[in-house]
Image (cartoon, rainbow, N blue to C red; front, side, top):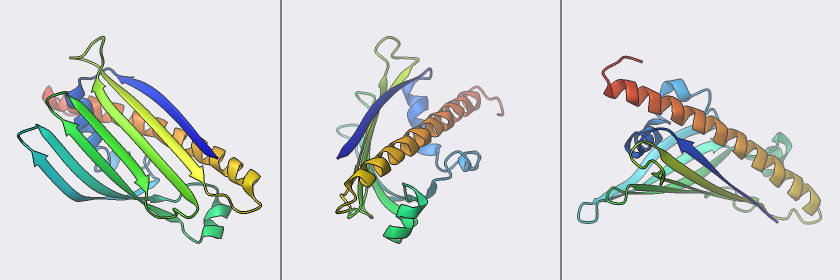
Length: 185
């Protein structure tokens, strides 16, 4: 069984500020508590295609393994490694991120897609964020009903982390706004 959910959020900040906040959110020490599930982020590759106005990046993200503690004990791992691929299209003002786990794939598959675009009602001042996440627990033989419960717990945890991420993004946008105005935050 696959659990999937989608959500939208409107940032009342211009696209350029929101995408800058997205790049800086993991590096800001003020965000360590809210993003405590993130252990490490490393840029593996980046490429700028100047003729198309696109930036391509690949990052490795190490997180605390999702799911209840007893599942982590069964699996034997407390961490999960993920790959994030990002495409920023400066011409169309779009940023698309796709993240998936590369470890624990025998037990769980998670894919998250996030897209930032100027909001159609106020494209110069607001940004719309669309997020889609799918979580699939691989059947644990006769424990399929337990797998469904674990998927639901993972969805709840991912939704909670998404809310924390939006709070961090809002704080980073306000910081960048103050920085651009020459005001110390």
